[in-house]
Amino acid sequence: MTADHARRVPSRQLIGVADPAALATTAAERLISRISANSGRVAICLTGGSSPKLLYELLATSSYRSRIPWGRVHWFIGDERFVSPDDPLNNMGMARAAFLDRCAPAEAVHPIPTATADPTDPDRSAALYEGELKSFYGEDALDPARALFDLVLMGVGPDGHTASLFPGYPALDETTRWVVGVPKANVEPFVPRVTLTLSTLASCREMLFAVAGTGKRPILTRVLAGENLPAARAMSTGDTVWLVDRAALPEDFRG
Ligand code: 6PG
Image (cartoon, rainbow, N blue to C red; front, side, top):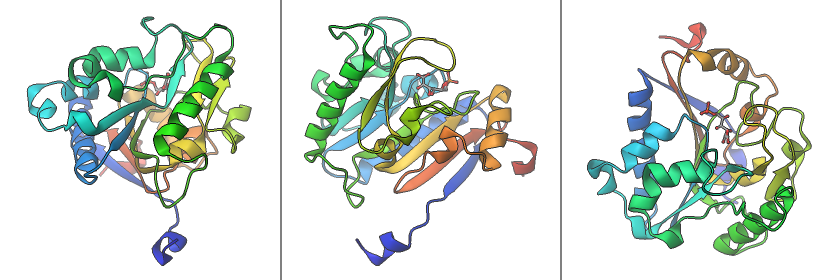
């Protein structure tokens, strides 16, 4: 570990943008810079929910599509609703429809397998995905000096959850497993989930939250006030950036 690593205290950077369109272009530019910063194999961890859809669609447009070296970028997902891959609720299904199916080679897309033998057992699916992540990383333990992901995209829910890490759930304190099953969600859709743990998500060069709309302002106010919520606990071992549009930004943080 370098002296720089040892001294590093996790902190988050807050970036305000005008609206959801500016949020999508700023996120797309950050994604491109993270890809450019790594001349080898790149790993991006996508997020679900409705917030990232605009960004995903933007990546498929000719101006962005031509700037991404698709052959060396691998796409993972931070959490999944435990429904079949073609269910409209499936997070990777949304990302596939928005851009991956048109742009990325099939072998570079790494969905959480939900079509497992037991449709009531998200733990089995979690174990399979953990195996896939470990094999991609090439080690069974995460090294703080070598990030698993170049970029992890994140969202925040109304109760302060992020990925499928809900307030007060045991999955939040899991430090051994990389991926866990969550039998019951705290918010809609009320389907079981599979989620990467905080320490797995943390293993990245950049963790990028994207938050837009007045509906997010109350929860963002609580996160920025330092409440002990999953989204506030999610921090990268590298940079943690919150990209927030004007409508979501609490009064105190407006310029
Ligand atoms: C999910 C997510 C979840 C999401 C937030 C925000 O499967 O629902 O991955 O963590 O990012 O709930 O969702 P919205 O973008 O829809 O507000």
